[in-house]
Length: 427
Image (cartoon, rainbow, N blue to C red; front, side):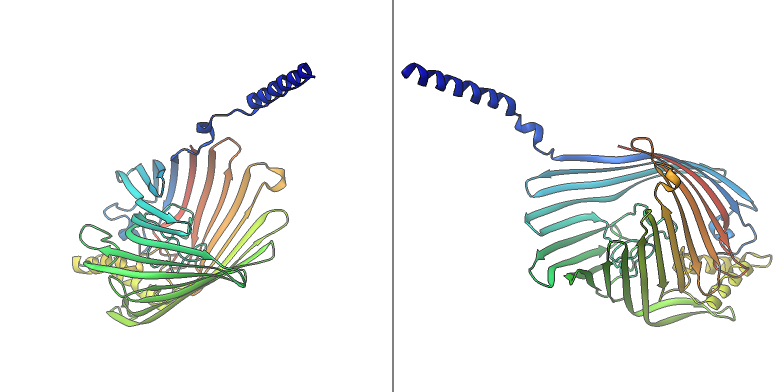
């Protein structure tokens, strides 16, 4: 009996030991690393077909003479990193480019983000440093992006540089129809050393965003106090209507906005008043994975058709024989104020269609994006083709084609066509 018990104990010990051997592991192998590092390097070749007779040509290519084409080669990188220890997180995103063409060779290095985050408890974080805020639900435009640089609607997914600011972000889940609530206050200083391009210097700009998840609808209410820019209020929403449809919208009011305007007779005045901007959009995913995005955009600080035409005529006269240096300085000043923005008009339509692996072309995504000025009927179309069949590699070919009559927005751009080839390696 005793011999049997001893044998059983030895067998049990052996089995236990065997199981212990099977499931032994090193904790250090599964603990997440405090470091994260990722990014990409890219090479790009671009061919421009220029319009030397257009109004915007002398402003876009000053001193370039009359050129019909321009070829540019560039290389770039983006490096993002994060280090987390307990409740502290140090993060940053660095981007750089070097470009060469017949007119210039230039290189840039910019910190898009660099800051410190404190997360003392679940649902609460405090950030200080250079941050990129992404307020709004629109794909091509965000009228409620009060504390961020605007997107490029020709390529809305491009990385952007943030502003130096201090923020807090609090989110709390709730039972019932109101499933979550969040709050984000913002402080953004502007002086000779920080955020100089945001607006008037020597101001501490305050704002806030209230987030609600109500009845499965994302809702944000925003406010930005008067400071370097006029006071603004706004809201946005986004809701999924089933598995294939999503609708979204934004509205923003700029209070007592001041805007320089070229009148029909060529005189320059200042318009002061409230400006309402809004965006309505929808996204639809078909069963064969074709994504449609449609947005209507009203830019309250944009220019009507006759105001844009008057500006283009002022620029043409300034750079025509007989134009004075004062006329050219005025044209450049107006362009920098708002007229030279990528979409300076007041009403736009945006459409993007992309198909994933169509016709069994694995890893191939064709897409077409169109931006149309609804007032003057000029437009820009961008067909593209991307391939991601090799691990961590993206290849993209894209053309940007502009069309419009004389005096229209896309008809007076300095570039009529652009063809670009991009190769990007992620790590």
